[in-house]
Image (tube, rainbow, N blue to C red; front, side, top):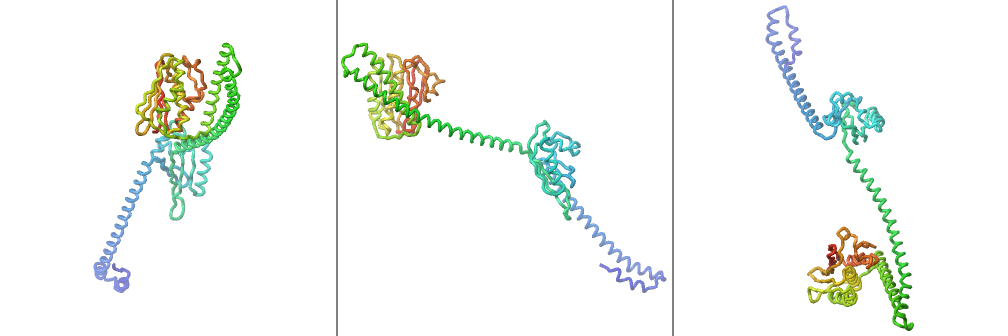
Length: 432
């Protein structure tokens, strides 16, 4: 670049009175130098203008990108001046509040905050404006339909190179569903704690009840057993001859006492199984032999009731590993029930079969049947279903409850199919 200042001494040494000389100097020296300087200044100005244009374009692109992001987000985005006046808000604000652009920009946002939250909200916002500290507050924000929904509103200050606040940028996020879920979770936790406490109380009451039943049953069984022995001895003639009327009275007393002992035994068995004090002693047996023995033992009852009892084993030997004593009592109970609830002249059929993995025993009768609405009650404790024979049969309502518990302890199932006036089928399935 020409240094025009360096030519000044030479120029001043010349006589400027000579017009031709001045013209020569102007044409040969000054003008070319000026042309070079002007050209370089033009290049510099063009460069600066182009740089400014590029910077403006990038700024516009960045602003457009940020605006696109703000208007695409589900949150309500806003910016304010350093003093807190709204100067931008995305469309989500207007969609949520139902206000127009002008209404929103009027800075009347406190009117949209729930009355119980607005005072603290304003105080926290003014504190942030004064100190420059980030703003964060949970409050209820009114929707266009008048419903208040919980929002988390946060804002941070952006500073210039001198540390002064240029702008506040913030967002409001709808957290109403989260709040509701947490509230439900808290309520559920309280309910769970209350139910747990009630469960413990019920377990204690149930334990006390079981102890009472067990104790009372033991105390009742002792005198009942004594009555049975002495009445039996009188009936057998150990106390001398008795008249037919005396025998009838004593027989009735003996049978009543037997029913009482049966109920007491049922109570003791149920108390034991409910207390978890039952332990199984499993042995391998032929189920066919066990069923035949039970039928033989109860044959007099079937004869008295003029009923036919059939047993149909599907294999010659049906081996299973079970607690013999308990399974025997289960089968005795179910076969006896089938007889009790079947009218005279009808048939009870017992079948047994074994597959590779399970043993199936079914007891089918031609009795009074059970209404479908009552089938779910059959295995409940103290359950008694009304039917034409229920008064005559009697019972404690504990037998089938206890039977199911024993089958459950064998990891088996007991199911019932029944139809009124046609009969019932009890099916026991046990692992083989």
